[in-house]
Length: 112
Length: 115
Image (cartoon, rainbow over all chains, first blue to last red; front, top):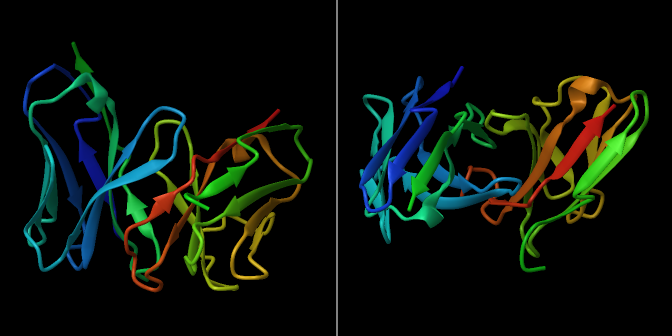
C-alpha cells in the first residue's frame, strides 16, 4: 500500500529565506507526483506536476524534484514571502492510478 | 463554470440525519473525484467517476455513503444516518485527462459537522 510522508509537519521562517519541504513515498512505481497548496478553509491548488520521466519541474520561485528510486521529492521555495504561508501537500497516484494518496502536509508560516 | 463549485459550503446536521453534498465540476471535465479531509490530515480518496459511472468506489467507508453522477457532470455525495465521525471537509475535484491521475482542480469543499 502506497504511503506518503511529509517532513517537517510545520515550519516557520523569516521572509526572504529559501526553504525545502520533503515528501517520501513507499512504492517507487509511480508515474507522477503532484505538489499542492492549501490555504486555511480552502480547497487545494495544484502547484507542480512531475511525470516519472522527469527529474524536476519549475514554476516561478518553486522548484520540485523527484527521485523515484529513493522514493523522495522535494519542494524548494526561493526567497519566501508572507503570501507563501499555507499548507503544502504532496500526492502520488494510488495503485489503480485513478486517484491520489496524499501526505498530511507541511504547514508553512513565513513571517515578515 | 470557471472552477469546481461545491454546495453547501457549510452543513450542520444532527446525528442520524441524511445529507447531500453537491459538486459542479469544470465544464468538459469527464473525471470527477470525491475526497474527505479531517483536521490536520491530507485528503482521503472516496470515489472516482469517469463520465456517469463510478470507476472506483473503494474509498467509500461503508454503505451509508453513496455518490451519483447521472448526466456525467454534476455529482451528489449522499450520506445516510450520519455519525459524528463523518464530520470533515468533503472535497470534490475534476480533471480533463481521465483514467490516469493528472492535474486535479479542487473545489473549496463542503464542511460537514454532525452534532
